[in-house]
Image 1 (cartoon, helix red, strand yellow):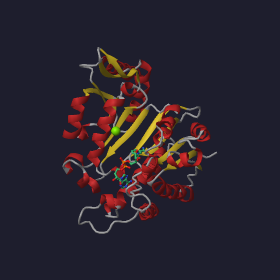
Image 2 (cartoon, helix red, strand yellow):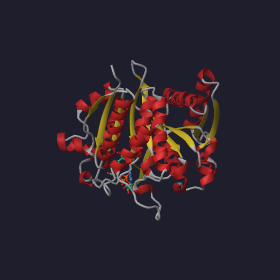
Image 3 (spheres, rainbow, N blue to C red):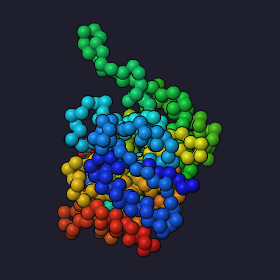
Length: 366
Ligand code: NAI
Ligand code: MG
């Protein structure tokens, strides 16, 4: 049977960009005989409107069964005053938590045609292709104890950075496996100089490396230096492996090396299922962009490139993934662009659906 894909467009521009991905999925089915069993459901505000919950139990169950989930974006001003327990982002968090998606993959790739949009000089970022692997389900955002307590007549806010050996080991394995398919280099970032969890992190990564990945080049770096190096000379890196908190900061920093939010895909992976594929959810980094929703202005590239990641990491279709990425790059190189990628004097921007069509034209041309 065909591999299965659950599509959750969500809210705002999530629906608009997903419409373009659906065209591309159809193209692969028609022209490459690469077919998927696609189902579609609600998440976020859309699910709240229909069911009074940002993620219905049936949707959650479906997400657990499919080979991959592709999500658009959730949220919007309409839902800002809802109780925390039913806020749109709770739908997303529930998916990540119940699927146990512990490895967050954030590529930072700089297409030459967009190097002018980087926060850095062109020669520093041109040709950049790095992958940040951020641990997503543990560390300071989850560790106990946490809370605001009273001590000696004043309040104290507490979060705990806590990592178990097995939590570090599994995300380290994800990073080494990825490196083998890329540039064969992992740089692990922590602060072993001042943090116990950092010492354990470094030890466990080193042990996993020696036991099973000795042929991958491994280096360690303190995360503050890592932030500096990312801005000074980012092309020295291939895969960066780091924890939840540092990964949050480092991946946002790396994102700005490449330019627009409309270009950034991501993947979140969990443990292998019975068929050997990892549990997986793919989504653009951007949100639901209420300021441009419903106007055919959103750049669908981030969501399309997220589908390319699904092709590569869930469906073993690396060639198809590369074909799709190259098509996006060629369209941009020809100056065919949505408004977020236009320079002030850059001519006329095209819309969301025209961008999707242009990418399909490019696929047809090759
Ligand atoms: P946002 O990412 O939605 O938008 C930030 C800015 O970037 C806006 O000016 C927007 O127009 C622009 N932008 C974003 N994606 C774009 C695209 N594909 N093409 C062109 N321009 C694009 O972040 P913001 O405004 O902070 O949040 C809006 C809503 O989205 C909130 O409700 C927030 O909670 C939610 N959100 C959801 C996320 C998710 O579903 N993973 C992630 C971030 C925010
Ligand atoms: Mg962040």
